[in-house]
Image 1 (cartoon, rainbow, N blue to C red):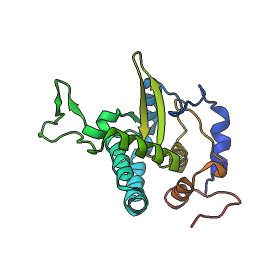
Image 2: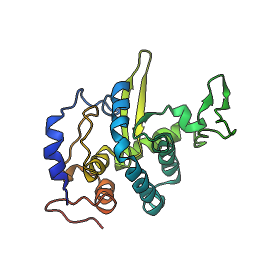
Image 3: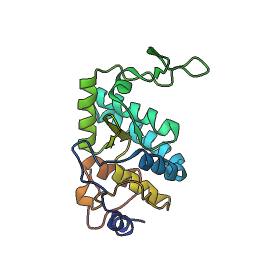
Image 4: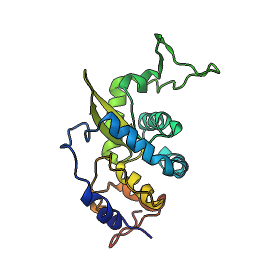
Amino acid sequence: MPTLTDVSSNVGASQPMPFPNPPGGPLVTRRQIDATNAASERVMTDLRAIHKQIMERYLLGKLKASQYAVLAAISARTLAWRKVIEVIPLDVFSRGMRDPMDRTEPHFDSYGVPYFSGTGLDKLTVRRALTSLVDQGAISRYEMHTASRKVHAFSPISQKCLVAIFDRNQVPWPNALPSVEFASESLSELECFIVQRFFKVTFENTQTPV
């Protein structure tokens, strides 16, 4: 059975952070996001199934309604598109994907169904939910600088949990993504529960949280 200690020795030491972590999360580029999503293709089927279990069997009764809606939105914009990380503007969280030709209208697919309808939450509520989810270890947030502004990319699972599923599938950790701390002491209670109960990763000299 792999341990997070094993993952740390194989991954974390060889991948220093490319930039200091700003308050909005580790800095990433569009190229890093695309490379990480490409590397994640090999774990996507397993990850989508496990994340569905996490949301339905555990997080549904643990998160506030606004937090759960925001997490579901991140999943809808990432895992549903076979990605693990994507840039999601606050307006998309609130109002969904808009028609590129008419921003007042939803963006429909060929069947006339919106690609993503949004949560209906105001931006302040979305910000608060995102901050809480990051603090709890339920999601990852990254910061990306474009030529005109700063944006954020999100993953519906913490990066430490994502490391666990790469290790579970014996897939090398993508060099494109900044490294993280792997010691069990650095995990939040939520992350600790998820990696042990859902990803079947054990810790040395620690007990499974109740």
